[in-house]
Length: 202
Image (cartoon, rainbow, N blue to C red):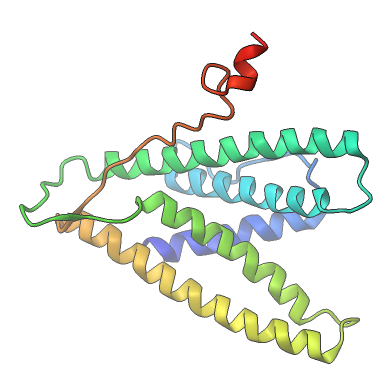
């Protein structure tokens, strides 16, 4: 099953990041692109999500220097673009994998492509990691830990459900019961031809 590969990689990424716990630490992909392309893509995807998670924490500091905040906002914008690009790379992987599958005449399309489901699974791994931190934080109140533990149990259940749904979608595509189409996101705010503010600066 796909999820039995993806979830451990996501956990590995998040644990690796938190050894230094710094958004400026160097990135090294532990999966060789030529030997395990899917693992390589999943590791990179979750690393992007993990760094951005911490960017989002930092920029919410009410005392952050405005100049630093603007610089960080630019990094978040770039990270969002990287995240979208990685989703499309992962969907490209599945398009290639199932290129020879003939869809049945009654085949249907899903509401989202496999990689956008995987995107949510990666973010969910981050929620689980940090909610577990809060549920076990010794200096927090008993009420806080109890509330976070309840949320953690819901997140763990959500991971089972989402993993099952992604595995089923991929199985349906492989059998021809569903087919996938990928629409490029066509984001406009980063494009100096499509964003009118950027276009004025040219």
